[in-house]
Image (tube, rainbow, N blue to C red):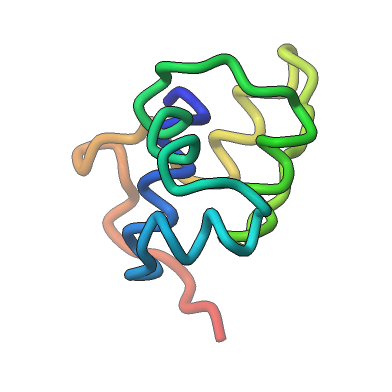
Length: 90
């Protein structure tokens, strides 16, 4: 998923407006809208500011570690691939 989409999804899950996040990140709402729609190519520091404004961090993961990370996060599994039972986590 593109980072622009991930940031927009996170903002929506938090039920926050673009204006609120833009203010936290020190941006205009218009510029944040362009970031979320991938209409601009912002600096990495700007993306980091937006990520932090939605309570997230940018993490670099070596490409060869992606399959293991996805497995730990449970991403990429269809319902048929999931175990019939799992240990409950507290």
